[in-house]
Length: 394
Image (tube, rainbow, N blue to C red; front, side, top):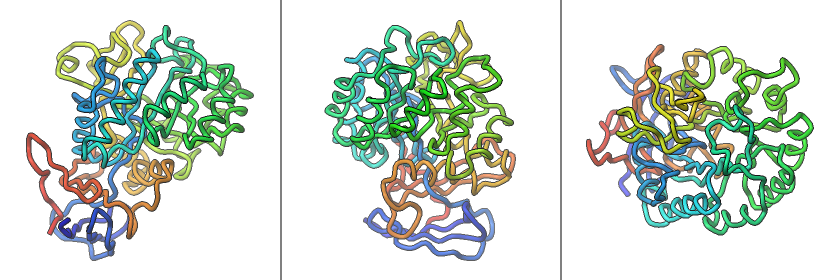
């Protein structure tokens, strides 16, 4: 593998940064003077722990295939996402297993998927059956957790199941949580109407995450207590949040960031596939009857409930940078914070995987714009445009 030297403005601190990549790893990381001219920002690749699909790639396609996952890996990388968890949502047991197997097949056969897919997130089917908390997950397939089904997921994708979202109100959720944790899987509380006691029992059993906190909830809640306050206050729960400008108002997002601080919160996109048919007025495979609204949000045609996002973490980083006034804080919430959840080793230091993004951004921008992306040291090649512009490479 060719050794490469990258340089740019340090997105996580002051001045400039020079990075040497060799053998897919960061060989050196050196602070330098702030580069002159139009040098890009340089920072770690983005890590997204909840991605249902992106553009034409769909982890929940009616006909699952490894090609969908490879397409997701390639298109997400163009937005700066170098590692992600394809997310399988509620469906029949057979359909969910088929989608899990397709992800495992992609990791086994596709180099780009193998580099980018950090595992699998299963969101459902043991979610709330109530309108609001259920979101657009199909009611017909909501069911309590069953150890046999959880084992079938582990068998379908050995070593790849990383996160399972469930609602603790179901009988058997504590046993399911203990089973998953014992097999190295993170349990996340989401799409729930659980009581304080039920949430506490799940956390005591080993649940450590909250899935897109503030969403997948009733339109109207008791002032207090309620399941959002309970999760926000629980120090053992690290919260994923969607910062796409639609799922959470600025004030809510800012409050969650302040309450959870850097160590207890991370950004997710909850992105879904947006094939041309959807962009031209059709419906999404996620939730059925879902359309792209005029405001850029993906909503259920009859209820208006949000159904995932069409924005990715490049938008989330810019949103949080605007709210906090800190690009470094925003980038950490989309890189080192979710990487810490995965716990796959060192991050953004000498010896770590060389996931690097060189990008343009200025205060007020709606997204960061990658110039160059390296996934485990490999430069992103887009099949349409070729290698992304090589700003900051020498």
